[in-house]
Amino acid sequence: MISTSSITLKYGERVLFKDVNLKFSPGNCYGLIGANGSGKSTFLKILSGEIEPTEGVVTITPGERMAVLKQNHFEFDEYSVMHTVIMGHKKLYDVMMEKDAIYAKENFTEEDGIRASALESDFADMNGWEAEPEAATLLAGLGIPEEMHEMKMKDLAGGDKVRVLLAQALFGNPDILLLDEPTNHLDLESINWLEDFLSHFSNTVIVVSHDRHFLNTVCTHIADIDFSQIKLYAGNYDFWYMASQLAAKQRKDEKKKREDKIAELKEFIQRFASNASKSKQATSRKKIIDKLSLEEMPATSRKFPYVSFKPERECGRNILDIKGISKTIDGVQVLKDFSLQVQNGDKIAFVGPNHMAKTVLFQIISGEMEPDSGSYEWGITISHAYYPKDNSKFFEDKISLVDWLSQYTTSDDESYIRGFLGRMLFTGDEALKMVNVLSGGEKVRCMLSKMMLSGANTLIFDEPTNHLDLESIQSLNTGLTDFTGVILMNTHDHQFADTVANRIIEFCPDFKIIDKRMGFDEYLLSDDVKALRDSMYNNEHQRLSI
Image (cartoon, rainbow, N blue to C red; front, side, top):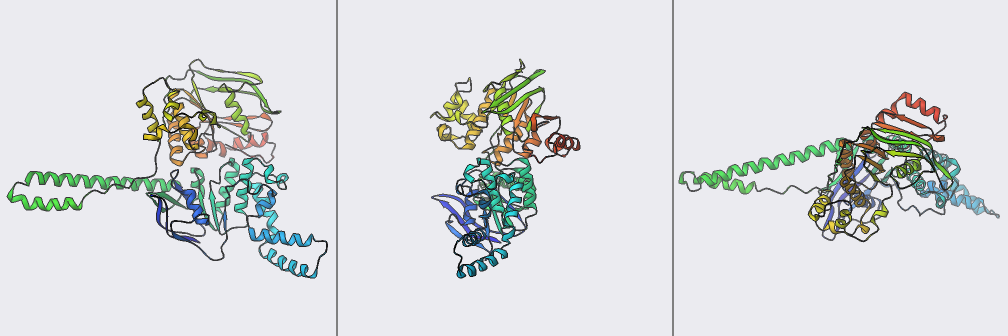
């Protein structure tokens, strides 16, 4: 068990949280949520001992081992994948390495034999003989094939490094597991595997995630950072959301009742203050008013941007016709004879293991890249707006947010631009920030503002939820659900895909395609789709990624 006693963290005058007294018990998974900047990752670092709180202490049951998902992706570059995973249990790894070093000696002494015997005993007690099979199982579940197990970490792609570090954190059945955004860079099958792993994990888990489906699946409790406090709720994310909405409504109702009571008493005082027979009652009611003096409702750190896409004109019958597009990049064929007819009302989620195919397709139809062969044609009524996976080129200039957004509107009214930025949470002087220093989440909100101003009736999104907090994801989710035009999207957010899409297109091996008009969850559960996928994947183990 891990607990906190009177934990407070301050940065100058700013208080992230104060007097936090919590107990995290075995058998439970706690989802740590809060607005960006509220201190989620910082709280995990306090629990792990990486940073010290301003006040208070963290207590861990003696003898329990804590594992933390590492954020430094270069820390283990000189180690093999297999060794990196086993290093998740440092004591076991140290015993293994010392034991192997002794056996590698040319001159094996009696003293070496005694030491090796002791190490063998320790190794067996820690279930060391199962270390490599366990590590291999974890790596397989997270999509790292056996041929990569002896590769050095420095030779892996960034996404694969994240998977190995996650396997490292899960290795050896830790008593306390701290995970900061564990689903980043994972495909759907890996996320499903992790959900199943954590659902059966018998020890303590504390996880930070912006994936609502993941939080709903694995969490038994929600630890909510808000109002400079951390409060525990039993249940998953959806239960917390309903409970928090009810609490907010109760606060508002209570405030309204007090305001109404004060207004009634003030009216009585005003009417009868000069009436001698009523003066005592008026004085009495004035004292009641003093006791009812309104306290300001605590300001929540949560802010929801206003995301709404309003097309300037309706889509006609012809939306997009793609005929036989092929594209090879750096000697690798990404698209081969791909054809698609997009129809009015379509909200398409593109899924499948070929991540590059989705991005390249979007770049081609948005005009950023030419196909090697084939063609595409937009309908004459169609105007499209594109959200690229990499938006860095839009923020290279050292100009203010107001000047940046002004490039994408015909209005020269600065108050209009500022008002629009305000709805996207850039209020006051924040609208004058230089765009080249914006955070990832701020850049996403800028790109969404640009798309909203376009008035486009067809929207193309390549992983739009990256860098967004839960509140912004919810706002974008609502905005796209309400959008009356056409949507083409690639997203790794399960709930986002299921609530927005009405058509699923999967890129399968050998450039085969599955195209079904249904929601994402229905697609995953459909026996017809499963049979079709089995035939296209030739019954080999392949990974479905949204």
